[in-house]
Image (spheres, rainbow, N blue to C red):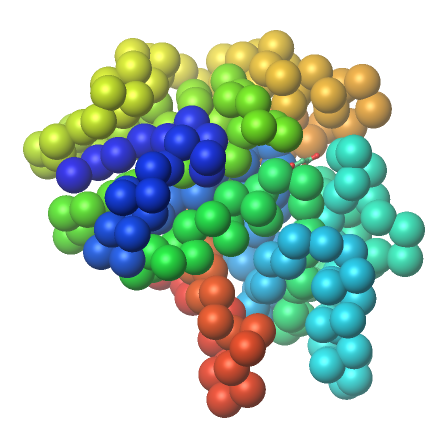
Length: 250
Ligand code: MLT
């Protein structure tokens, strides 16, 4: 089964109950899942997505050794008092290697939480699309969940969903849901990073970023397959004192 959801709210109660048998691939191209992927690639030891600013600040106090960085955005902009905003290119090894990233964003971290019951949760981006597909090769049951923006479907997320569906189907057969069939048609095999950047510029998320002066982030998020790292969200880390892994590299 390969099911695509254009918003977390499109997952029915029945499907949510069955999510524990699926790998969830969560997409927020602009920019949460791109940021998380870049952060893990730059050596973040683990990441913890949280839903609000107060929770991020509270959780930070549990790491008094200075090993935590706070990242994310509200209305696209860096959060006052946080170490980093939500620009993928800011998550350099110099800034983040060895750290725990606590991140809160408007939609992406909400989508990661919506996938919480899945047997495995993978944040995906254009920068690691092939690596994500490769990591899914033995999976029979996959749910691709787009974050959207404030309850509305977004072109940038559906485009990556289409890319992943096409590439997964190139490798083997899956039964697709109707949404999967429709996003599949959005992706064209000859798309390059430049054509993706152009499409992202026109998208809802892209237009928002241009409006607030963060157009460079679009270019960073549009690069196809520049990273071979696949992050994994392990939701129970925050509650479990014994475990140290919040992310894995494939
Ligand atoms: C989100 O989670 O809504 C996005 O990452 C928003 C953004 O990057 O501005």
